[in-house]
Length: 91
Image 1: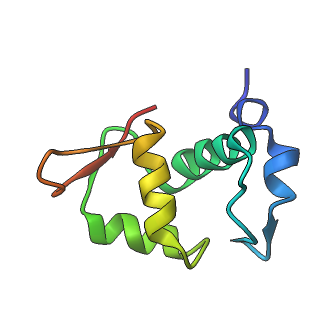
Image 2: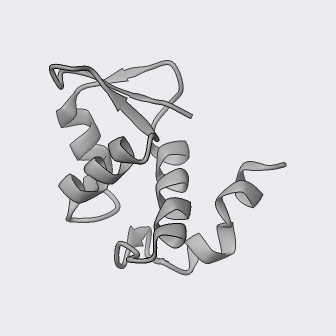
């Protein structure tokens, strides 16, 4: 299965305008598709990121980067060290 199929690319694409996420979906399934897409497109596997780097990457797609970061961590897309000093793509 391709990454596009896994993320529901048509549904995800509809939520973006000019490369920016128009709104964070309220529906869990739809939000999960967006989070999967963001994790796959913004973060490389096997690479550590600082919180600042995560924030800057998320800010390129939506102004509410703290909410996106929180959703990515709680949804298991990004892991965070106990002290919050490093993040890593989980899937």
